[in-house]
Amino acid sequence: MVVSVQQAREWIRAAQRVAALTGAGISAESGVPTFRGAGGLWRNWRPEDLATPQAFARDPKTVWEWYQWRRRLLAKVEPNPAHFALAQLERNTPGFWLITQNVDGLHDRAGSRKILKIHGDIWMVRCQVCGAEARDERLEFPEMPPRCRCGGLLRPGVVWFGEALPQDVWEAAEEAAAHCEVLLVVGASAVVYPAAGLIPLAKSAGAKVIEVNTEETPYSKQADLCLRGKAGELLPGLVE
Ligand code: BJW
Ligand code: ZN
Image (cartoon, rainbow, N blue to C red; front, side, top):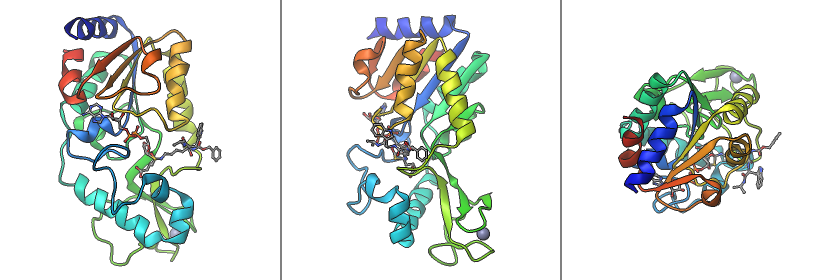
């Protein structure tokens, strides 16, 4: 393992262009439940049953309760050493991009700036009628589900199953993956597409792929290096 960490550190240090793809596992050590791991369920709902436009159309109040439960939890937690390590890597590497599937805002809070939020941001809301978008950090709404000034239903500014990713952000993520020399994949189960497709994209364009995860993923065998363990323990050693 020591040898692997050293190898990863050398690849990263030698590269001009590095990209990181992060998933829920990077925030696990901050106390944020992952989607598919133990403790990831809220009131026995699976994310596939809540994170869909159909679920929201059927029961917007329950879906908003899930998001408000998550927003209140996020307001109490802090970024961990893995988030800070990626912010440091951005400062060390001119051609760095952070592609995150996370909506939790912990990368921003750790100081990362070149962030491509491909699944949106839990702190944004969008009106389903007039389309107005705004940052809205309220932990309590006067009514549930919350409404826009125009009277339309507000929804969280995130990407649900069956919805297209924000086009400009997604194109920038593909560009970053296709042109990086090293792709770090951190705490991502790599089962949700099109995000997971960035891994073979980078690999086929010649990048070294380094996976940092406590468990194996469908892309572990394609990775050039797998570091098995917690992101908060491994990432600081990769960027020092
Ligand atoms: C640690 C750790 C520690 C734990 N340290 N590691 C191709 C094939 C099959 C299906 C599809 C396909 N293409 C598209 C689809 C359909 C679908 C999909 O992928 N389904 C699969 C599940 C089968 N995809 C979509 O619908 C996407 N849209 C789309 O394709 O649109 C097409 C379209 C085009 C044009 C017009 C219209 C449509 C959208 C996907 C949106 C996903 N949204 C969510 C919710 C976001 C909002 C919210 O947060 O509420 O995104 S679902 C959820 O899963 C969330 C996450 O970003 C995403 C990925 O999860 P993640 O981050 O990987 O977390 P976990 O929990 O799965 O894994 C944690 C990992 O961490 C584990 O590996 C642990 O081992 C590890 N770990 N502790 C290191 N300390
Ligand atoms: Zn409106």
